[in-house]
Amino acid sequence: MKNILVAIILLQTTVLFSQTRNSVDDGRKIKIPIVFHVIYNNDSENISDRLILNELQDLNLNFTQKNDMSLLDNDFRNLVGNPNIEFNLLDTIFQKNGKKGIRRISSKQLEKRNKLLIDPSNCLNVFIAKQGNASDILSDRVHLNYKSVGMSSHVLTHETGHWMGLYHIFGQIGNSSWLRVTFGNRNDLIDDTPKQKGATAVCYSITPKCPCPPKKTHYRGHKTLYNNFMDYNPCRCMFTIGQSIKMRNNIIEHKRILFDNSKYPNASLKASGGKDYQQNQ
Image (cartoon, rainbow, N blue to C red; front, side, top):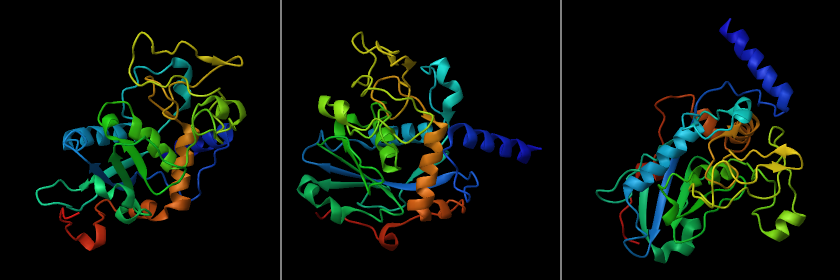
């Protein structure tokens, strides 16, 4: 009976949103190794393990639908999806007395990030530095500003969504500059996300100037999906069913080793055969 119910749910989501699940997807929790490269010039940029672990916890809650949903608009409850993806620190020690999965590097190495990448087909590389937050669609890395990490702004969740192939909720327009909003493609290729004109609000904390719900919640007669992680505002708390299917499909189609390795609960990844890296940069 349970299998029948699961089949019905999968059929409903496929028919309703036409984001078709890959035929090999058995719903397993996909486990992804993650390494944080902290590239710093001074003590303030060399952020603490605690902030990094806070960001990692936020990422895992968001990608397993265990996050705080108290800000969710009731109109969106039937759209909420669960990517069922878990991120675990790479099982490699980079520096003596360091924490596994966290690599601390002098800012002199900032322009050599391509050489610092660790097995990008089988690992999420996150570079934390004095820089903008960014990730291209299905890229080999995520960039975070050191001031954004651990602040409950869901910045890593948003950029990881790009890393898994999601566009912004407002389409393929990169950011919400006037030029791109006016002439960019507003189709994010996900059927259960309504179109909207640019980001809802480029801010991440609830203030009188940046409330939740936002001041503007409608576009061309329909409510915008302002709670979506791929928007910009302090109300972000969900992926849709279509987005969840899309991300899982992209892992299977473009990063298949991550899906295959997730079949084995105790599988782990060590960089370069488990070699310990010393801080000699």
